[in-house]
Length: 399
Ligand SMILES: [Zn+2]
Image (tube, rainbow, N blue to C red; front, side, top):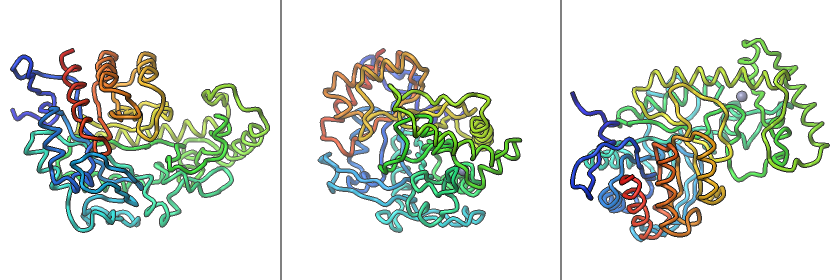
């Protein structure tokens, strides 16, 4: 029987014992195509060779992104993209949608994805594709009817595309079909949940109060309203409730801590949110069934983890980098409290002050049940970062 890519990922060479071993934990590297473009494969060869990683996570569709590269192997220091498709899409996959497919300008007509996938295959490293479809400015600016809307009918520019809109869902489906020929071992969907605005650095109103934030950022776009009505919830009444809640909360004091929203269970706004969330979970379940992969993740930044389980999809929590969320000690304390099976971890400063900090955190995270890691930030870090990762992965593998 042929060994699947997923199983191959779990076969590692234990250099200490000099033998092949099976690992249930997958240690992966977040590997942007633009970094590969600037390094001409050296970075990939170096990391896969030195560290012995189990998978590569490649951002294939993203929002705007800017990075300063300090890695000496990356030729250009400042990289900026307006986002979009970072590979040449096959237009025939997108016939069912009116939304225009926008290729990121840096990519042009080249196919860096194919080149990286070929290199990964050569190194027997499976690939996982990260898709952030909701936050592409080139799409959200032009396809305004697909954006989130608030209870006043205002367009939520910072909300991004609404994942309950059938056209947005079709677009995602098309992206996943388009990517199949590259043979991905899995997919990561970024912020694919209801009522979760994309984080674009824009100041959002009402974020100082969890109930106010909830009332202001619940989506009332036509697609969401339709889902609610079909689920037996009066969308107009829910919108009225959101407006009343917002007015009431705006007059209240700032809560002592940023606690969970406290809208009561029998509130129509709450029902409106629940019925749409349920519909999205059903859609994700169908999506998982149509994807021949055992690695499907919903990626969210720490502190924005949605409270729902989508069958077939595992939550993947992103920690660190420019979205620094506390120290590694706080991260480990969080892992002790919640079952988090997958982490996307910025593995350099400022998240970790020294290599021993990263080594300890990764090992303890494995002990606390983390089975899947994306290590991020290499293209932005000095050469020493590879050594940090090598130590962390080797130590964690020894158990
Ligand atoms: Zn919506």
